[in-house]
Length: 317
Ligand SMILES: NC(=O)C1=CN([C@@H]2O[C@H](COP(=O)(O)OP(=O)(O)OC[C@H]3O[C@@H](n4cnc5c(N)ncnc54)[C@H](OP(=O)(O)O)[C@@H]3O)[C@@H](O)[C@H]2O)C=CC1
Ligand SMILES: CC1=C(/C=C/C(C)=C/C=C/C(C)=C/C=O)C(C)(C)CCC1
Image 1: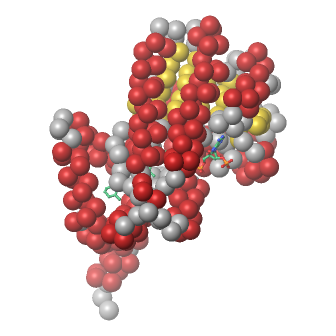
Image 2 (image 1 turned 90 degrees about the vertical axis):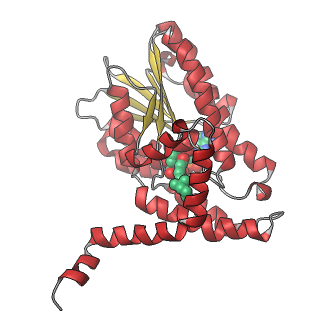
Image 3 (image 1 turned 120 degrees about the vertical axis):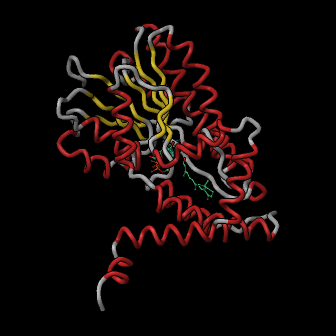
């Protein structure tokens, strides 16, 4: 149970990745300012979190079951919180989906929206009325840079995050009247199970109903570039947890929070040209004309930072 003066923070999707690291960072706060309720849909997956939380587990960290896709599970979970009092709700649970649209079943697409979009709305509907009544609270949504800028072959995932951005942009205005804050966290690529799940999922697929050219662009052009982008721009889940903690602790939290400054120019391009042509053509060029150059230059950058090239070119043989 939360001690007097502690903020109650409820987080979804804490079995791995970003949710797990946010839960641990807040529960291990030196000043013990938070009581974290870390939730996951299957408590059998709690071990990694419990181990990382160390002695905070059972003190500033407690666990509850929660599946964001189930009305019943969401209600049961929030009812189990003392007085249903949540100061900070962190909507983190989410799933990815990549591949040619033709090859993806409607059911798989709906699952992405059910989790990433309706899952967040289900949580907000359950928690927001109490926050409005209390005239206080902070709702955080882990969105994505793909909520602001689409990425080729991520059509449905990007759409689910765009939908969330539109929903939250609209809701934030009303909530301000009730002293409830809404903030978006917008990471670029982050090294978590998300990336592994995507690679594992793609390697099993046959791409039914997709023409050979598209399969070739996806497998041999997009996927290698995507791996490069993860390697070059990828952040750790701890980076995102620290950014989220700063947003919670800010006196006047920002609505949008891009976590990766390397991604800022990509998003800025969209606002620089209202016709949208600049982004579409720049992405086309980056992917189809510069893919191999990007691959080479990223490897060159890696070699320069690891020092092997410098040693080979500078040291006398
Ligand atoms: N990794 C990345 O590159 C980026 C990720 N994001 C976003 O960050 C968030 C966290 O992802 P990340 O940590 O990377 O990925 P992970 O796959 O490591 O974590 C996702 C978490 O969501 C949980 N989850 C999935 N479905 C449900 C559900 N129905 N109910 C409750 N929990 C569920 C998973 O639980 P389970 O173990 O049960 O599957 C898991 O704990 C997502 O919203 C994602 O879209 C944003 C930008 C980049
Ligand atoms: C391939 C490719 C790109 C890939 C970007 C990727 C792969 C971003 C991944 C973001 C993630 C995983 C967000 C999660 O929410 C760019 C940079 C658009 C430039 C054009 C070529």
